[in-house]
Image (cartoon, rainbow, N blue to C red):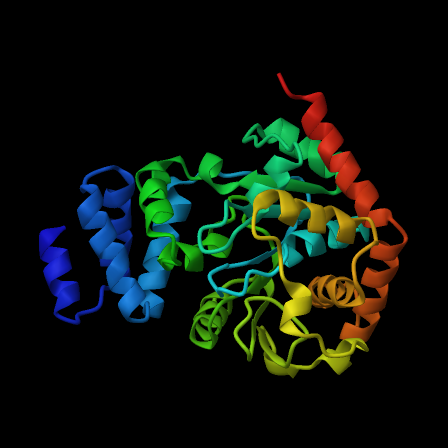
Amino acid sequence: MKALLYELIDHQVLTKQSAEQALLQIAQGSHNPSQVAAFMTVFMMRPVTVAELEGFRDAMLALCLRVHFDRPVMDVCGTGGDGRNTFNISTLASFVVAAAGQPVAKHGNYGVSSACGSSNVLEYLGYRFTNDIDLLKRSLDVANICFMHAPLFHPAMKHVAPIRKELGVKTFFNMLGPMVNPALPSVQLVGVFSMELARQYAYLYQQTTKQFAVLHALDGYDEISLTGDFKYYTHTGEFLGTPSDFGFAAAQHDQLQGGDNVPDSAAVFLRVLRGEGSEAQNNAVCANAALAFTTAGKAATLAEGAQVAADTLLSGKAYVAFEKFMDVSKRHQP
């Protein structure tokens, strides 16, 4: 690791193979915490290259506990790390998408650079994390959605998790999260925290058969916030989206704030899921679900997708899917 750190400090970049090997060694506990922290810090000070990102991704997938479902699934997620502290928009959109008929295998984790990640809010509400494949399949059968808590599927990352928590800022692991869903979803909506990362994701995803949309809001969000325009990439090109594309009014930043702690965030989550959110909150969730629908081929336009999402959320169908999801978990708690 010392030699590798000297190279990185000397402004050199890693090949795909070097990046993959470095992460494999870190995951195996071959390096001490100070060296690992230094390694991660380098990539907070300069952009990760496409080759490095690809190598890190391949290492994570090689080490993960893979999950195979008997149907195509979708993931709706963000990298986190945008520093905006919004409520759990992507997680809520996932339940809307599932309730509307698109199977969802969501990959998530605790918040690192925000108060409350998807794992924080679901755990607080009583969800019990599992890597029992049969139980995940049961959840998908009953609720059309399952949740994979990242640490249970990437056990080799146990050497990294405490360091990430102590650093408390986004690292290249934030960049990797959506790429290393152990179910290898064939459809994916990904929000990322920078335009450069959006282009890198799009480049890598274009080398696959995945149906995808990678988005970044021009004012910095890793999701569609409706506070301004956003860029998104698919197999067919690069597009500029606006709030009016969904038929929604523009939102303000303070209308999208999550709680300062997990209980407050969970309260917001349930309020929105029950159809009791503010117009801005509901619209943000529906906008992300709408792009998920068009990505999956379930809607022809963003406006059509937004209408399906609004009907699903405000009719209570999304909350019913959540109740079924929670019931599967609670019934199988020891």
